[in-house]
Image (cartoon, rainbow, N blue to C red):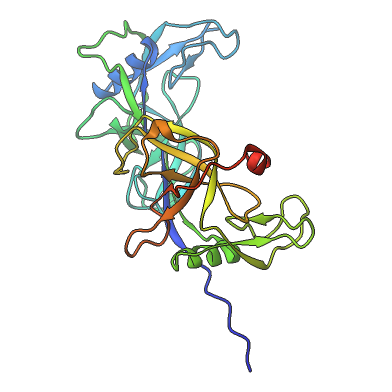
Length: 320
């Protein structure tokens, strides 16, 4: 009799993103408004240096600075790195160089992309200029990229600028996004596969005997592997909870609703889940709940009251 082969470890693409709207002060507002109008602005510090992109406080003295100056759209590459496989949403779809460019009239360098046929065409000290985007909205992407420049250097230095623009940009959306492939590992793969069968399975530590749900493959307290599978629940006890009043993007649940920590019977720690089947203001610590599965669902949609008497506080106080 041969032993059964272990289940294939799961893998899935995941996206973590957090776009947020940032308001702009007078210096940053002028900088982004300038980009929209094909103007590059810097700010002059107390010791006379010109910082591009501009900052609102002197990096040496920490004093507030407001003296804006216009610099050229040409400059010099101070250092670079070749990117042979551009990722989605990067400045260019074809291979390009990340470059630090010190614009003429500036004393600091600006990070952006350089459009070049290959790494052999890029060098420190090469002259470049801004390639402006066809449509500009008041964002760093108004600079589409840099490109090689063989023209003359500007004779004039940075020029004072009042920072006044028609319809100034007062806020930007800063997008943070991470695309990656996630593998939950052996222990959580078994946990997820069991959920698809409407079972909740944890793993017991052979030393302290605590049952981890979801399992982690090892006990974080004892530092030993956990391989002993233990089916817990399905019912459990609400140990603590919060009321959600802000609707999440792409989540089709009407607010307010309750998210709770639920200690399933037999588990050594609580997991989280949504509470349904009861008004949000009647959810309480000690409430006995059970999972509700939708047809074809691979995990509980929510937990609802079982109708049992509330659990005594001493029965779950160590799991809060």
